[in-house]
Image (cartoon, rainbow, N blue to C red; front, top):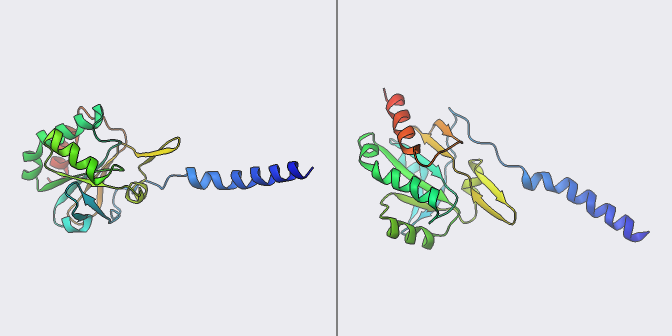
Length: 177
């Protein structure tokens, strides 16, 4: 009898707690202030989003360094870097990988823009971009286009890594008219 009561209490506690753990934060809405943050880049230096006021920011979240889709997406951003520079836009990639992992990824793939390590997953969560993979949490492939005043101007939640950079450049061109 005591076992059954104990089991019922455990089930009730788990039933009440699980939705809180599974509930993702909402994605910042277009027109709202982009949540500020500070994370370390691949070279170990801290990077704050607010440091880029006055520039456009392409803040893209991706699941994992050294994977096919993430490598393709990063290569396309790198390929188009000069066009982003012309549009006064910086590219910041974020995943839950470590600084060391980012450093290896940038070296291997010749990436020159900043990759930020969100090992605590707080920034990824604040942008509603956490993906639960059982015992592991990764970043969802989301992108936020942030204007020079720090406002979210466009959100991408259904990203095709093969053509995403072109989509973002087209949106920048339209928003900067």
